[in-house]
Amino acid sequence: MSVRLGYGTNGLTDLRLEDALGVLADLGYDGVGLTLDHMHLDPLGPDLAGRVARVAARLERLGLSVTVETGARYVLDPRRKHAPSLLEPEPEGRAARTALLVTAVQVAADLGAHAVHCFSGVRSAATGESTAWQLLGSSLGPVLEAAARAGVPLALEPEPGHLVESLAGFHRLRGLLGDHPQLGLTLDIGHCQCLEPLSPAACVSAAGPWLRHVQIEDMRRGVHEHLPFGDGEIDFPPVLAALDATGYRGLTVVELPRHSHAGPELARSSMEFLRARLAALPGAALAPTAAPAAPSAQGDVYADRT
Image 1 (cartoon, rainbow, N blue to C red):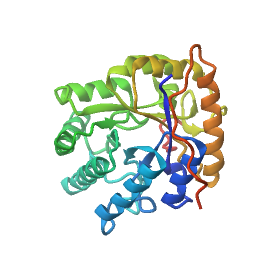
Image 2: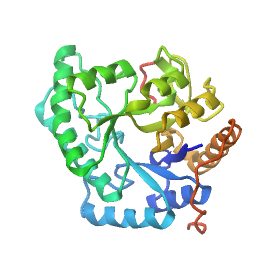
Image 3: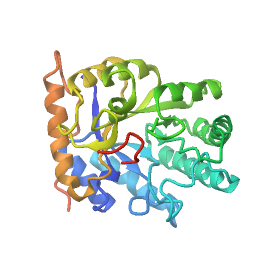
C-alpha cells in the first residue's frame, strides 16, 4: 500500500506554521498541504526567499513531504473571498492571481514540493461562458510556463460552483490548453461524492493518469461541506484501494479548512481513521513513515464551504 497521508495547514490556522509541522510529524503524517497565507508563509510578505529556506529546513528535519496549495481565502483581497480569480473581468485582477500562482511555483520548487495546487475561480455574471474559458486559458499560460521551467506540475482542482467544477471541466481545460504536460489534476474525494456522476472510487480510477495531488475528507451528496471522517457518506476503503491501484505517489491530504478550532485533535483522529482503513485492505502494507520527531513545542451544492 503506497498511499502517503498529509494534512492541510488551512485546517491548522490557529497554530504557528512551525508548530503545525511539528504536530503533523509527531502524529506520523508523511507530509503537509501547505496553503500560502498571511499566517503561514505569506507569499506577499517581506523576505519570502529567506522564510521559504527556513520552512524547507524544518520540513527536511521533520521528514515531511509537501504540496503547495493556493486556496487562501483573502490573501489577495481582504474583502472578497478567493478574489481576484483567473477569470476576473479586469486584467489587473487576473494578473494578480497569475502572479500569485507563479510565486507559488517558485516556492514549491524551493521547498521540493511535488505539485502546486490551484483552481479556476467563479465566472462572474458579466462574463459569458466561452469568454471565461478563454480567460482561464490565457491566465494559466504564464503559470504553466513557470511550472515547466521549475519542473513542478500544476494541479488544478475542480471546485463546486467554479468554472471548472468537475472532471469533465478539467478535461475540457486540458483540451483547450493542448494537453499541456505541466497541467495535472487535484482530485478532492469529497467533491466526487458531492457532484460527480461516478462514485468516488470510480472517479479516482478515471482520474489516475492526471493525478498530481489528492485531497480527502468526508462529504454528503449535493452538499459542498468538508466533514470529518465518519460524518458524511463516503465509503473510504474502495477509495483508498483505487488510489493505490493508480500508482499515484504524491500526498493524499486531509482537507478540513473549517475545523481549525479543533485542528490538532482532528489531525490525530483523521490519521487513526485512515490508517485503520488502509491497514484493513487486502495485502496492505502501509508506506514507510519517518520515525516520529521529538515532541514539538449542510447547504446547497454551490455554497462555498471551503
